[in-house]
Image 1 (cartoon, one colour):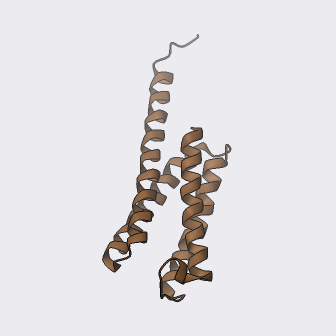
Image 2 (cartoon, one colour):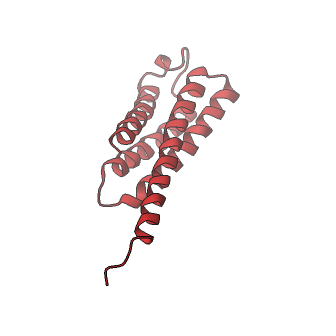
Length: 128
């Protein structure tokens, strides 16, 4: 679980950092670009989603929150990769793809772990 937390925290922080850089100095991410509505929309989505994912990764109070958050983050990153493909932005394609794979694979792993725990608890003998 620590590896899943660490990998996904790095991916979330990376996405959030890209959003902030895009707002402050967009030329660092996409040479010759300026802050546009697209950059602002990306930041408006990336910052709260990243913060929510970091909360889900570190919160022990809501264990059922993590798999849905990872799935949502993975789907959003996949959409970013497809937008990058359509716009011809290699960094967006690569970053979105890496993040989508990391988030979705983690959600799959954690979902399977939860199912295994549930099965083992269901088949445990009762202590009556």
